[in-house]
Length: 127
Image 1 (spheres, rainbow, N blue to C red):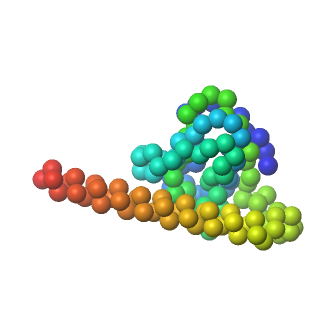
Image 2 (image 1 turned 30 degrees about the vertical axis):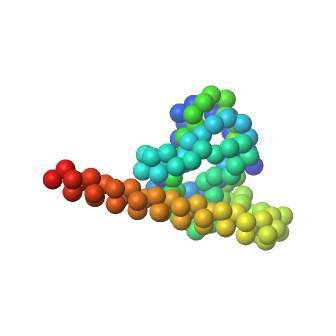
């Protein structure tokens, strides 16, 4: 993993973009957004950005730093695959990461649907 040091207002993950890395928050603060609405705040030692790495998909949320002096460890898709293939990352750990990824993706999909329904209702009320 590489160490990344960034200040406030840096977009680490952009909803809809193809993923090529995941992050581990060492210090600092970030906010997770789905369709611009806050859905969470990763805490120290939280992993994020992993969900799209396992299915070669697109980011389901945007993650933005919200203070200066953030430190994150970054793992690229290629390095993750090398760890898996080498056996250094055991099957239990990979399964746990995949489970977290699947759960987060499902939550973000529900939020997207909820926001879409809310938007349709607002449009109906404005007519």
